[in-house]
Image (tube, rainbow, N blue to C red; front, side, top):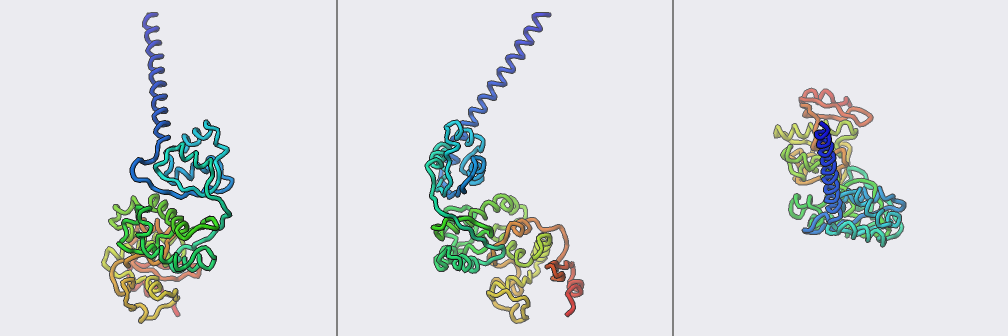
Length: 344
């Protein structure tokens, strides 16, 4: 009996030793893998800005979100074990996915491009020309150069995989993500465009990419629809409803009849359109053409992008502005739609 107990004890100890050994082996493999580059194939150049006062946690978040490191924990552990955690510097860095973790840490301790930073904000629903005008007026870009750069996706296609899904020669209309950005005073037009495309890429991978096959639509169709939703919806809670109306119309082969597409053609956001204006010849005019326009009509924000690929489960085919707060009345048939229109 005593011998059996000893054997059980020895077996238990052996199991514990084996489990610990496996855990150590697994951790070592993970640690070694985390030190290696993200890819050994084609490198992806990534510009990253580390703001002044960033903690090691913030820096690890930025590196991980930009696909430069495999493990935030290993990055912090390696920096601390190398006694450089407190020496990581703010600045703008040009890194790439072929760099191993120690090379990235070395770059961050040397310091990146420094200088005074400035901020600019691009509102949701801005068109490409409006973005160029705003940045030019604020002294951040040369308008002609900015327009030239953004007029053809080929200028940035080698850096952004999602741009390869667009039509040949298509502009970046709709893909310059509206947000508030911090840039260095000496930032070039290319740097600013890249920043905006970086932000779009993040939203695309997080909220859009996995929904495209499910809805059987292309990226360009999703962003085009999102841009119309952005311009038509005034209240965030209604964006999925507006999206549903357009999805339902597309499914039924109905024209979208979006005033926003006509306003895009006219280059003027008129509150009321004449009948003649709704007949303006253009492939972007959804009053005379079935389906979606060839491309986006503005830069949609994240909520409109999400709504475009997540329409509400409703049967609505019409909506009309009825509330002073920008809310609409949604209906399933033309008669109810006409009755819902505010009386003049």
